[in-house]
Image 1 (tube, rainbow over the protein chains, first blue to last red):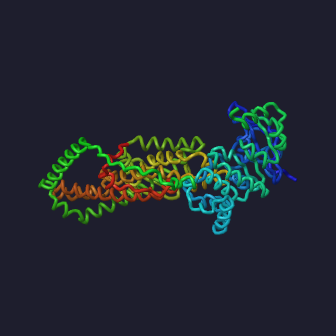
Image 2: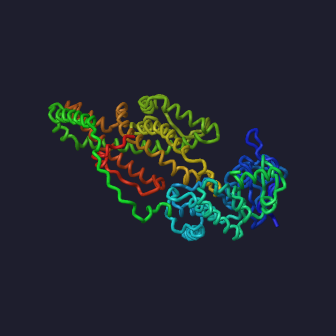
Image 3: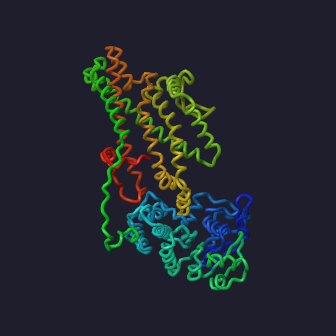
Length: 257
Length: 310
């Protein structure tokens, strides 16, 4: 079966700084992959490469067996046009650290925007689905609220509903709980757990080790642009082999020590 | 949210309400007296000065020629602003384009039209025929399909529109660019991640948010345009000021007719200000956490709390 995401020796540099140095990665359907690691390790960049918000400099990246951002003709790669990139992105949902809801639209309008504008689905049908999605993330009563009237946790859940409205085959989460007050984190993680249980394929950049342990099928620890260690969560988080992983986990799990 | 609920039920020990003597602002009272006195002098002089000839003002306020001039002023203002806004958006988008020739062309346009006086531009368009006697459509360096006599094509009206509108576009371009750049980059990213194209992102996501920043200065520009239209005096298009001039050159009632014109400008400016407020309210959607609270001028003027000067 073709993996949903397949990355082969990805390199990415910003100017003279190499951020990703030959990353290999595979995510199967219905699998949840958690990317962990210190800040600056390249995990967010890797995530952003998957939907081509960042261009990779070398290697190959496939989503659902299709090359991301390029197309191959003979032995030459051609950059995709902006429209073609947009076409690829509509099947990949993304949730950002800072929510990035559209502030001039209500929660409902946020969720409806892309299906109506990009997929050109009939409004009535989308509205129905948007209400269902808001209910699924526990915000049925907030449909008419503007983002500024919602708490961070509520905004992030609307953002998840917005991404789901496009019925993506893959969801990317970029530190979805890092900008939240601690007491609001649980609601967002709860929605994500449910999503995983429902069989969504997910790649999650996170600092929530408990969540990674519970939900991830596979954890990938990155540092300095390379994958240091990967495997099932109970192995990588529970009994890490590498020194760097142990150090990182010690710092994250006992920040006061 | 439960966090915003009222304090706990058990009543605290009853505290006695504060009954303090408010601060007396003697300085403010003195300044108020001075202002009232000055206002009295000005109003008295305006009412009693015979030279202002208020009855004549009344006679000419709704004179046919004045109303015709007024109508032309309004037409010029509206069309010039439409040209200015459309051109401004186009120039702003060009200016932000990654193509250096696009952004360069926009920069040069803005440089040229902001860098020369509007009067010069108006005169230039009016005398375009001296530089280009005939204007035509055709293939460059090839055959020409149609051509017109420039003097017939460029009337005083079209010259006024070209002058005012193209000049305004240069200023509006900078206003629109500022608005577009004020929108958080995460918005563009979120729209891209949802698969929206760049044009759609601009139209649906970026511009509506930029509007909040763009509208107040655009309101200024419109009000300013209303009065700037009087510059077309130099090419003799019949608008409000020319109408007033035409009349007072016949009957020598210069001051009252200038007052007539001024009153109309004031009236229109006031209307435009109200319109601007309505539009601003519309684009403020989603910016406040709660229902807009009203503080009337009454409470601000008469509040005894001393007012918070910010």
